[in-house]
Amino acid sequence: QPVTLINVFDVPQGALEPTIRFWEASRDFLARQPGYHSTRLHQAILPDARFQLINVAVWESPEAFQAAARRMQAELRVPPPPGLAFHAALYRVVRD
Amino acid sequence: QPVTLINVFDVPQGALEPTIRFWEASRDFLARQPGYHSTRLHQAILPDARFQLINVAVWESPEAFQAAARRMQAELRVPPPPGLAFHAALYRVVRD
Image 1: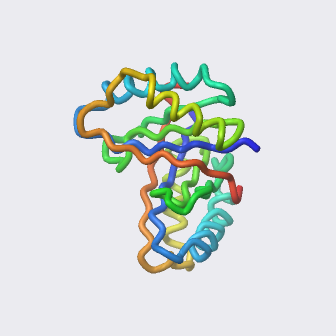
Image 2: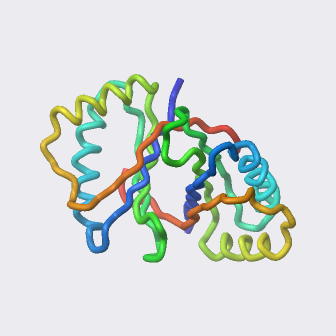
């Protein structure tokens, strides 16, 4: 059953562009993995937002995402910008 | 131009159900406001996720959402659960 990955990025001051490039490298890798459906990187329209970047992606199943994430950790050679923190977790829609 | 509201809830231990009820009261109010398109409340599938609830909604424009939020603050009589923190901001998709 499809699942939604939401990744909340805690972007250090001045690291927006490098974080987007890091995100693009990860997206290019993950988009080739089995079970990938789609992804959307959201950028805050105002600079005072607590979280400047939030990614919302859809995967075929939790297992498909977890396998892809393990592969990425083992193979992707692109380091995250210094000081970047992020909170990635799998979600299901419970109300709309 | 449509905009995405993402609200990241920092839910205190044991306050998941009251937070969902608070969210439902807010959704019922906001869904009647001009410029409202849609909303989806996401719940983490695992208890160790940093953010247990994240809402992703679509509005016709930033102005439509800001007017609705001001009205809600003035009129809605449902208090949030004690200790609940949330980070709401408007976003646009910059990559997919």
